[in-house]
Image 1: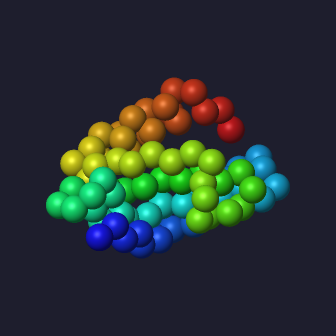
Image 2: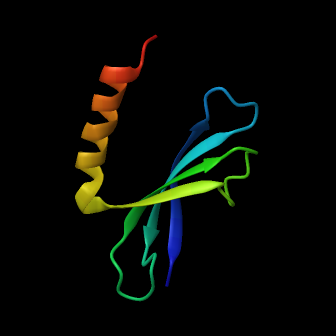
Length: 78
């Protein structure tokens, strides 16, 4: 059975009400499917119905973190 556990929630920069949520989802694609980390983007602050979401298999989490850090180092100017 698909279950969703909220891990973190924080404001989406440069928006009035936007949120980013990070959740753990068991069986996201049906019985016996592997769990994923879900990243949701809600522009209106409704964390239960994100406008965008990405499901990342746990096997890919470190690769995604590395890519995000590389993007920030290369393109983000404070």
